Image 1 (cartoon, one colour):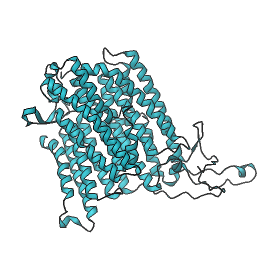
Image 2: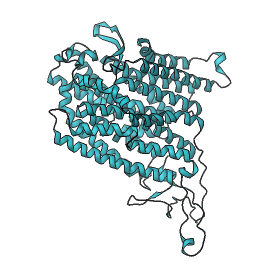
Image 3: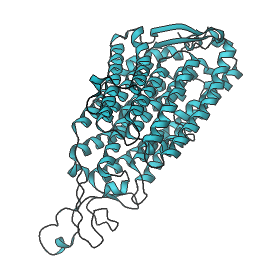
Image 4: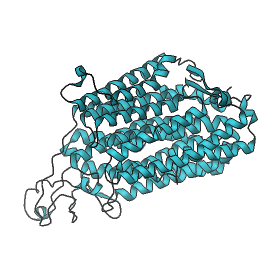
Length: 560
């Protein structure tokens, strides 16, 4: 078990170095580019197998106990140790990271994004995986910071070199926001280490350990500094503005990993560091965190509603990015409640968001490859069907419009609709449980927190779920069914559209709809696991909650 966990972190780094070396003659094949992409699939596949083996060997009877631990002195003068371990909180995130990275590598083998050498692409992808896995596995504050920062450079280059329009500006915005936040976070981590005498996260999480050396003022300063760095990565309103640009410009696999795993690093830091190590400071700032989370939920939903309106020039990829601001708001709200129910809901919502939004970004990237655009007005256009037979008034009616993706690529359209309804929190799918438990946590927050204030935040979050359903159903109506959205926001199918929503030329001549290929075999292979796990988590939430709940109870109980 120790070797498995250490291998999870080290193997991607070894694979990244190997990707930059010339391939042996027997493995080079006729196409060296395909050989290095195949190398990426192989390494990420081995890492995924190791993660599954780690999950299978995990002692599910004691998920609150740190397992597969490695504790080696690294820099004795500073008290920094190579301390690794996994419990019920970090195990699902490790498996999710390994799964999404493998699916991204598999997808890229068949659909490599336009850009420089595949060698650099594979090396950056594996380095990104190593940093993310290390973030969820390390138990030393300084190692956590190093792993937290390790992912920034590969993601910057993935956006800047393999991204789309405005990629340089988006990459710089991403790196500047996250680096500035991380500098402030480092000050908070150093403050904890200096005042307590240790950087060990397990020791600091116990009430009778070094945490006793942290005064109320120190905890306030530490939470404020650490919280800023974590909030940027989460992303919390109003520190979220880097996210839509980064998602819009990033290649498909970059968007999948950014939404699926990198955003989880911020919320994981709140659960692993802020809640157990600085509980008094967290208790003071919890109402403010909850308020910003509630604002983020509403803001993200309203931004998506503005983007989905006809004629707004909305980008589907940007819309899903803004939806992440709202969904991660539920995670932050659950954490701010400081209750087992809320924190469990936050951890569940983390996994659900990674599965569902990863699937949506995969599909939007594939849709752009098929149509050349992610503009919602362009995607909503569909070819008109045959004019109704007969004469008189019936002949004067506008021809019914085609059904967009449902008619041109029915399996693709059906899977896109599935992702949308999963994202809106349909009961029976993964998106439902996390948001519901987060609101339950806000309904009855921890002792000492203002219940009227948290009830207000819960109501705002509930309103956010309604707005989320509204914009996602409008997306399905426009993209999958070919409907238009009038100025009042109502969707109309088959109505005459002076702006060409039905695909007619200005002179009234019907324009043929471009062919849209349906799902390919490699897309089935890349996307089916995400859809299946979304259903499984929705129907069997106890599989995940059974892991997280004992660990959360012990974490909030000061190690007891």
